[in-house]
Image 1 (cartoon, rainbow, N blue to C red):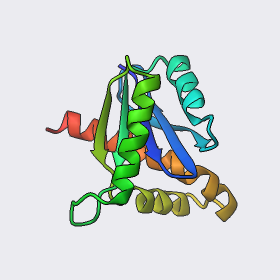
Image 2 (cartoon, one colour):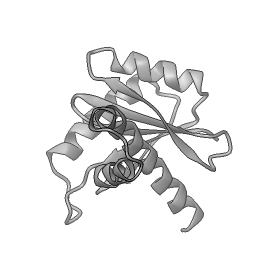
Image 3 (tube, rainbow, N blue to C red):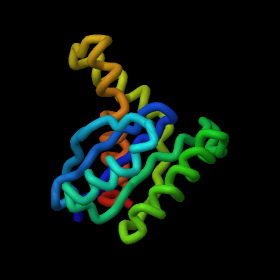
Image 4 (cartoon, one colour):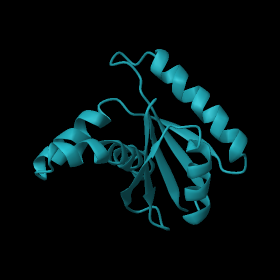
Length: 137
């Protein structure tokens, strides 16, 4: 089963994908929110033969939901209309952006490249968290 991870943002959407066996996740691309994002995501889902979509929910540190979660849920509803046959699940994504930044700094990635990679790496971390939860219930 191949999974697609999404780190939704109002300007950019980070996309990551697993291998066919859902063992490892890797960053794929960043989609710009410009009214074509659903078409681009649909293309990626078909191209990579995705069986399930995992979307990060940006909950507050106390576990509550705020406006960011509401925006993600609206995005997911719209995505469901386009890809109604692909199930969508959510996972808590607290601190994924911070972890992505730390990984990129650790790799010595330049500030310019970091900006273009942060969203897709966050999506990758979302998938890694999901896979860890599946393998360690």
